[in-house]
Length: 407
Image (cartoon, rainbow, N blue to C red):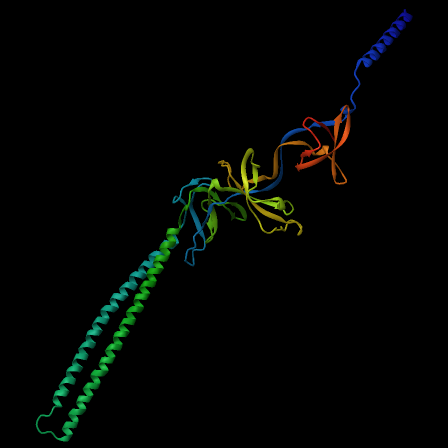
């Protein structure tokens, strides 16, 4: 029994081996080219791009600064009301108000000063009118005395020489007194005019003082000077940086908001000083946003900085050139201060033969590829054109449909 089992196992093993050998002979031999990755040459569009990164901003905007009150004690300004960040505002719309009670109280004091200055002018004019009339009365009396002395000095009867001399002296005395009074009245008139002028200037100064603070009070109500999106600015609050909000204190002239035109967005980017040599104003750009991976907008290079700049965070020999990219499309999600990138098209070509960069071998300044030919690879020189990170254009040496080895 045991012998039969061993014989049966031997027969089965021999049959399996024969079947395996028969199947192996029936399989076709593999091609030598199947051991390598190949790519098919085909016409396509290709572009060489440079990626720039930066953040969004608006080309058209207005800065909203805290007013500068012309009052020594109003150095801290408190925001009483403030529009919500991200609100679209219209030109002339109220967007913020600042506490102006201190200035309003000061205006009340200045109004009293203006009234007092005007009253002083009227009072002094009345006093001068009385003094002027008194001077005129004295002048008329002096003139009458002079005329009477002249009449008395005329020959009338027989007068002694002494009497005639006395009359003549009286005429001279009254004439001198009248002349002196005339000069005195003229000088007094100028003095009165100067005094009133000083009082008028004082009153005008107080009125300008009042107008100045009234204008300051109007500026505490802040209105938008253009249509746009309200963008709040960061502010130090209790040792921490945060977005400005209602109730915060501002310094005179401090920037706390911007009103931006959302249809004039741009990307403020930086280009490496080597890459910058390929950039030109007007080049097409595809703009993408880190916050919205599915969003892509067209753009173009708007401006290129004339000088490369460094940063204290980098080595001194590393320089970047500022580049501004305008965004041609519009999307309400695009607001200032978003991180973004732009793929700048340096050069492009359509309907050209392309192959992977890894299929090209360079030797002695020439380019070669290995083309599949009857189950083997044949080396062939090629002339190349535009190249990017993954593809390269072939100007000559290959035809559409050729299959090249990819290393």
